[in-house]
Length: 101
Image (cartoon, rainbow, N blue to C red; front, side, top):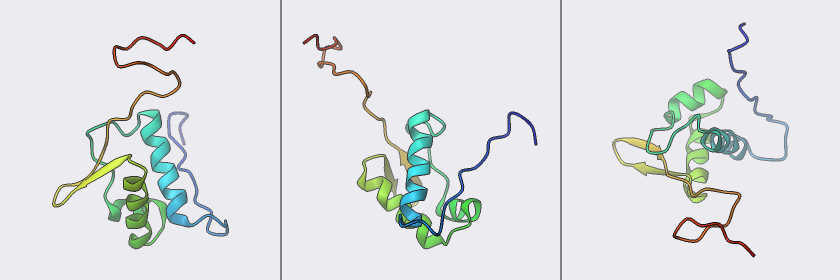
């Protein structure tokens, strides 16, 4: 194991939070950190199921959760893609100047 190798988050089947929500949170974090870039596909349901050791239905529910959060869009026949996210942290007006209260 090298220092550059990332450790995959482990889902907790004993948690009160459903596995699909846990998986959606993992993917949402990857989107927030830029690991999954806007206008790029997320891994397929089959890939997510294999990678995280969950059922394909769980991966499908995670994708549904991400769509409901406004993080991805699914295109029939092509897959699910990351949506461009508005910047967070500062309140800005449409001309890009920060709101000085």
